Image (cartoon, helix red, strand yellow):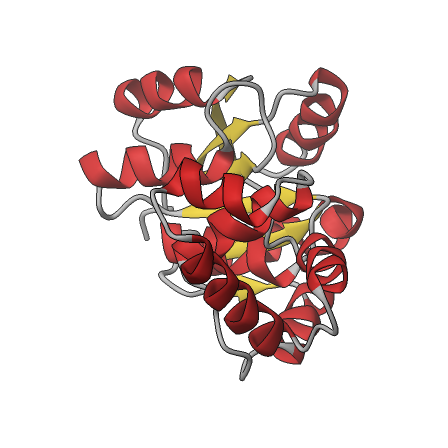
Length: 209
């Protein structure tokens, strides 16, 4: 009986010490073959084209292209590319953005040693895998109304202390329209006022990225 080929893995993270830890885990398993390491999205894209990994382990927060932007970029060229996100971020908005971009797995770095290998296996087999802590966070808000891109733009400016009139000028909106967006934002987030909306936006990762 012919043995199956090892699962080719590309690792993308801008922290060398973290990469060393992942490399140590993978090198101890004959089932996996590390085919490359990248420190940013640009390197990851070039590596992907040359080594065509089965599964890519992707950090979210990196200098230059973010992990989510890199996933989108690669999947435009290689629609069948499979990604597992490795991150410290469990906020539901960040998770949903990663899944929408095409990630099939989502792991917190704190849970790696226990769940990494099984997650890679599941994603390589065509499945999806989200660690329990992240799944619980997403489930809390699964029925919530999602902010539109325009509403997120408005909320980001509110978080920066920008007045409604200035927000309108920057976005090409009337002040009345900005107020309407804010009313919708507070309703969707269950916020008491604009400051409370910003606090919720930060807590849920809506203002990240």
